[in-house]
Amino acid sequence: MTVGTATPGPGIASWPPLDEDKRAFGQRLLDWAADDTGVGPQLFLVRGAEGSGKSHLLAWFLAGAAGHPRTTVHATVLAAGLTAETFAWSLGRQLGYGPLPPARLLDRVSQDERPLLILVPDLHRAGAGPADLPSAAPETLLAELLEPLLALPHLRAAVEVGASGLLAADGVEVVDLGEADGQGTGQASYAELVAAVPRTSDGRPDWSQAPDMVLRRVLDAALRTDDPDDQEAAVRGLLADPGFLVHGSATALTAVLTDERIPVPGRLREVWRSAAPELTAYHTDSAERAALLHAAAVDTDPDLAEYLRPLAQQHWWSAVWARRALHVSALALVPGVERGLLASDPTGRLRTYDVGSGASTGASELGASDGTASSLVHPASVRPRSIAPRDARSALLLDRSDALLPLVTEDDPTAAFALERIAEHHGSAALAEEESLVTALGSGGTRSPYAVVGDRGGTVHVWSLGEYQDVPRSCRVHEQPVTAVTCVDTADGLMLTFSAGADGAVRLWETSAEPMPVPVQQRRYRTTALAAADTSAGPVLAVAWSDCELHLWHVFTGRVRVLPWLHGCDALALTSEGLLVIGDPEGLNAVRLRLDVLWER
Image (cartoon, rainbow, N blue to C red; front, top):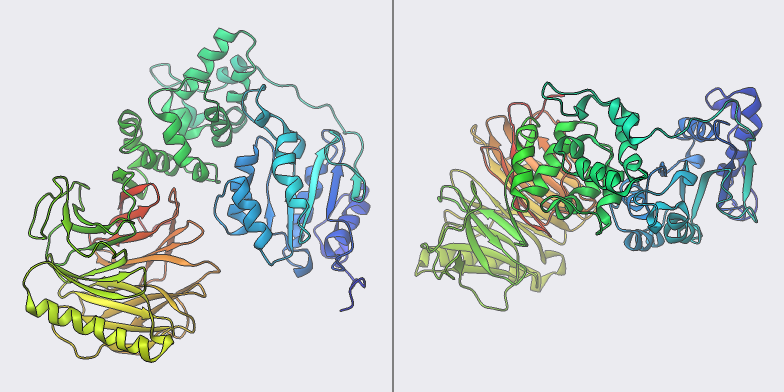
């Protein structure tokens, strides 16, 4: 197609019905969105007074846009009550990057090769928090995020600005819907909003029954209270109420807790900061919000964690323990050791923990101890990124240099011979052919330990660690390099191997047959970790993705549940009892999955 020549756009007749007096505005919006010449304006402004139908026009466009490839909307961010930070989190989630701070979001969008179209209703209502801070003004979001986004040539936006005068009209497409049909509503006071909240039997506010309008506005109303003492008491009371933390506006709470001048109980500010990127997503289930906040409070604010625990445990997942500031790069359950968990930190130190409690196991048969945790001894230059334990005394490591290394901590010639054979096999193959370079290592097996190796050519190799093998069982499963692998042997004798490729495909190979012809999952993101276990509910696969999503897949039925974890995941381990151990940049965490209700809808 010649640049500068537009192909005919979709007609308004193919869209949902629109009021007659808005049809001309709707057609202009369609024509702007469908213009693929690359020379039209990047910005479409929707102006008008309160109640004139501005948001309705954008909602109408969004309802019909999905059916027309040239008008695909990649993200819709309702800006009312958002700061630059919370806006960036929402936009990052919708574009598939996960919640990112503004600077990182701008960098990711600048590298995105897609021509992007976003909708921003209610920009003039953006801002939250104390009125004397920049974050309370919509101009801050505009200057820090929206204007830099609009400077990128491959991004276009339709933005509702009301009668505010935000964004200059020069060189942009503008529609003005004029005056409203009726009068706007005034702002209710804090006392009026709190009076609308039902009470518990002992007289406390029952935030679970509060109207949505109250939950959205009551914290902002508390900040507007004229008397400084009353204002402080109102804000302090809301922040000290776990019920409000679970049910109140997450974006308003995020803005208020950013202000260091506002006193908060315990370590709430730290806890909320950890959970806020996920809490500000659209989680309407109070038990899930409680589970998220409880997960952030465990090992940080014990009092808050205890308040939240009963509600969190009603959800299908809840945190059991956490070890903050213990960043791990690799995890594996230790075969033959009940509740044994082996972890590597980024410096390469290997330690063992009790998987049920997270406690250090102390000195053990693994060798040297530093007094707080058992530490496997290996060369200081080794930085494991994956571990496949054979038993409590030996393991196979995948170093960050892509080398497989045997680790035997005692005089065990049988283990040394078996592990050295595996390392030698793949080392020789990589020297002969670059496609054979090892890119992933995993483990599994309940009756006998196994190691699974993935390579750059997309081939998966399965080795028994319990007995000597001269060559592995191998199969080319992917067209792209393998990024993660794991396996599980089931009670009926199946050996299920799971692998992820650089193309975002997760595949299943039952080693006595051919791999499944289609992926069990296919996404446009990179898999960062896999773990599998044969549970009372059947085989379960846990998949962590680069956009911070964590998926749980019921192998025999194909059902998937999304666990909204707080951070990106670097490593996983899953027990047969449904305890999921997660290694992320903030530490080591354990989550209990309720296997009896996990797959219910």
